Image (tube, rainbow, N blue to C red; front, side):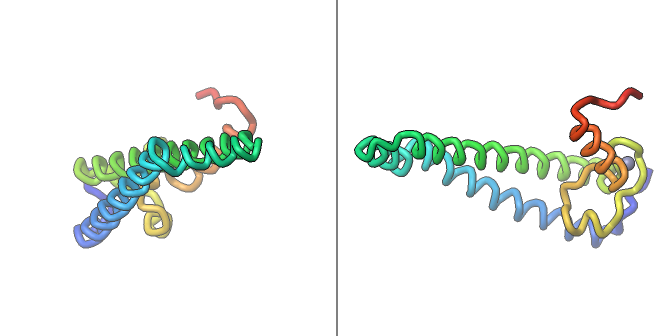
Length: 132
Ligand SMILES: [Zn+2]
């Protein structure tokens, strides 16, 4: 099955994904440093002096949340690059239909078409998985 995208579009998306991946890796690198290094440690110490450990803990939690979100985004980027390489990029993982081009432009890691995505979000929101 040929990719619905022209080779020009594929190249543009690929370079966009690679740039995004680079930025995400940088972010995670900084976050790891924060996690292990001085910043969190200092924040904890200061907070301890103020008797305010809860907010320092909260800060550390936010940091971890950001980091795991970024790690998830890195995974999505890598998956998208893999689909790009295998020629399945731009096709919905769920129904196999072409993903709207505007959607890919807005979010190049999209792996589902709009209707499958909103269906999944709805299922998620309802708190149960749909039966096939
Ligand atoms: Zn779909």
